[in-house]
Length: 106
DNA sequence: CCCATGACTGAAG
DNA sequence: TCTTCAGCCATGG
Image (cartoon, rainbow, N blue to C red; front, top):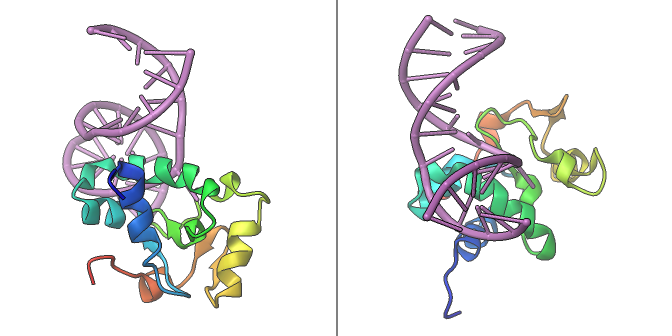
């Protein structure tokens, strides 16, 4: 992969997210070396719909809220995908967010 | 080149 | 503790 664009960097981290775990945009951004570009991470995730290897549903904001659920096919698709992995989601928010949070740096 | 937009974050009131 | 503001930077018009 000769071109290491911003997207590839984001995808690279996103693909590392373990099953049943979640992370935040800022954590990924920091791992990329652009901690201030958390918005870019989310924006890159928006383009991830072209790549089915990207578990975008495991990426939420720092509050553990599924801010990007509206970008999925269905309004509840993101939440259901997480629940399918054993993640407890209540009202668009991950209840045990801190418990299942995964740090990309690990 | 300038302006608008965005799945965010941290600080300030 | 909650709400609001400004900074962040890549992409597109």
